[in-house]
Image 1: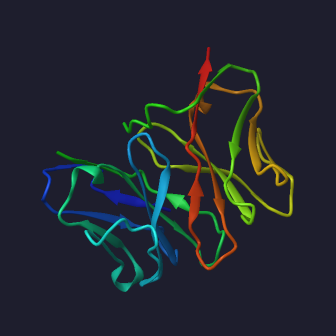
Image 2: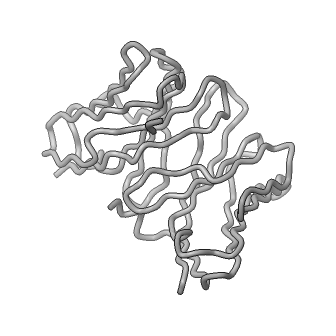
Image 3: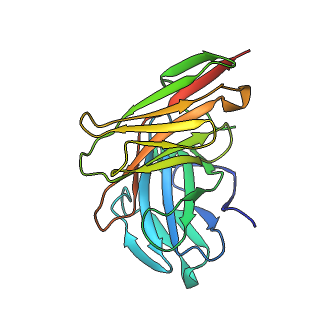
Length: 114
Length: 113
């Protein structure tokens, strides 16, 4: 069974540009999460979907970030316009229905804003 | 691969010895805890979890200890192997409506041959 996959693995963009990150969760997983790790800091929660619904977006830093999960399958995270401080590694994770079920992480997308 | 941070605490252990990685968690109401392992260029990988109604849980070569009195979590790895070299994160979850995990800063484990 395929794990959580993220695309692209790396992205380098200029400040002010737009980037869209994609996450394909494990098939059948209702829960999908986005996290990010800024250089030298801890992994921080961004938001949580249950199927196509946003359940918790308390970690989204500002309105330059937009996440969607159309049809409750894959998810995208768009940053528009990107700023230098958005650089980091963005992780997606998915888990089965319910709380405290094992979350499986993707390999991450390294975003560098120059 | 990913640079996992410039200022992570580092634990160096001789191959074959036991490793103990510690974590202080932040919220006394947290009821679920997880240890993740992250190798360079990869995402966090689940190792073991424990619920707050337990104080110890064992897996294969790993043991997690939970001390709720002092909000402390530890991961013990028996007979540490070179493949155990990675960054280890603890994470906690609150019994509220949110499912999010709160991660610690991580500890880099280096296994010396």
